[in-house]
Image (cartoon, rainbow, N blue to C red; front, side, top):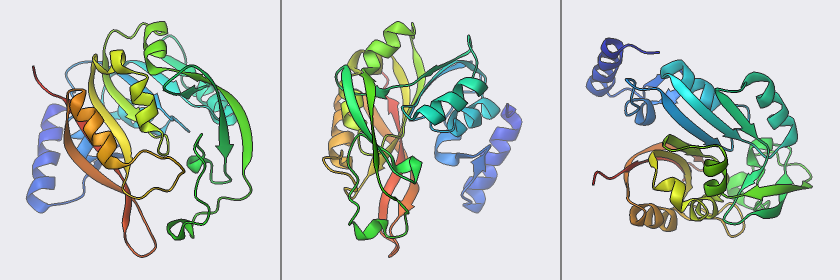
Length: 238
């Protein structure tokens, strides 16, 4: 875990020299605002290979984490690395309602989603999607997961779900009321059918009591257009 003195020195140098600072793989926009004086409870939706939670563990003390990943091969690897009782791995989709949803699996696994990707989009010409495969997955709500996992408070909620963010949040209103920070992917150009657009997501989170604190560039088109970013939202003080 980064000491307070080292953290302050790093922050000063990044601001002074205007450097794009990263710490243990975390962008400055996030790590500079994480509390380091308390153990954190982290919910990682779209955990994939677990790299996000691992980076958080290098930087902060993690008291509890719930990693959620619907791709079976990825979830199996997560279960081997993230062990209970500190960690919990759930193999499911997080959605607005409980039930069953069909996951579209692309060769570039990180682009897989319950939403259908626009394979003809010129912005995706450099992404090798391959022939899609389809897999039915259990869907659970964020509220159900938080209750079943007995999460009284969430210090950091991370979403990387390829345009499905709004459905997850609408099924997690009770959990959001007990969440401090949200780190979520946001899209400025629709790359998936019926995907969540940034203005709608931003409005929802503002109405839920969060403020947009920072943005970090994530994905650009071949012509340089910014398609996606990671956004940090913080619960407003009451």
